[in-house]
Image 1 (cartoon, helix red, strand yellow):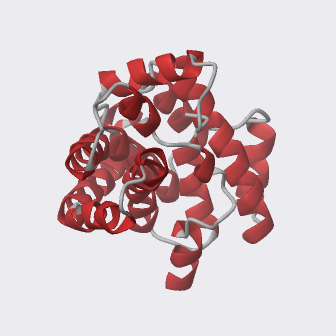
Image 2: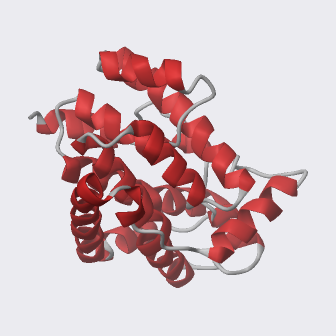
Amino acid sequence: MSRAALLVLADGRFPAGGHAHSGGAEAAVTAGRITDAAGLADFCRGRLHTAGLVAASLAAAAVLGADPAALDAAADARTPSPALRGAARRLGRQLLRAARATWPSAELDALARRFPKGAHQPVVLGLTARAAGLAAADAAYCAAYESVSGPASATVRLLSLDPFDATRVLARLAPELDQVVGRAVEAARHALDDGVDALPAASAPLLEIGAEAHAARAVRLFAS
């Protein structure tokens, strides 16, 4: 297993399309729920323990060999917002393009044929990690970290927030990120025996509502 592959996959410069998405941060800024670093910390903590946990468990389960179609259906069921489902599939499609160019594999090729319009991003992330020789925990870390690093980076642009403050928010979330990854991997292992219903289904209604409001806006900086 190459830790260098983990660094490549987790690098924000990996061309997976995430830079165009705020993870709900733009909608939260517009609604006045994020106005400073403290608000960003609250937002990221909530997202980590809901959307982040769900994404991390899906990615870990994909690495462990769960059926991608079942995982994709589970991701759909855990994403009520059509706008968020569309964004997840667009991100999955872009990640799959980058992954097939970086770590060619028959599994990634099969996923592309099975989901020509894109599978959910965490499912693609898990199979990408598997193709790169990474473990379930590695994929879970990537998914969990993406769930907070994207909003943090976006908020720097949206509010002209000091990048040092945004980075401090991420650093202080590190112990909780470890906890979320542990829960995600444990759930993924249970899912192999008990099916995808064993995966977390933590909800974040404001993220879903915000995504629909954001999608309806005529002017926006980020795609989601």
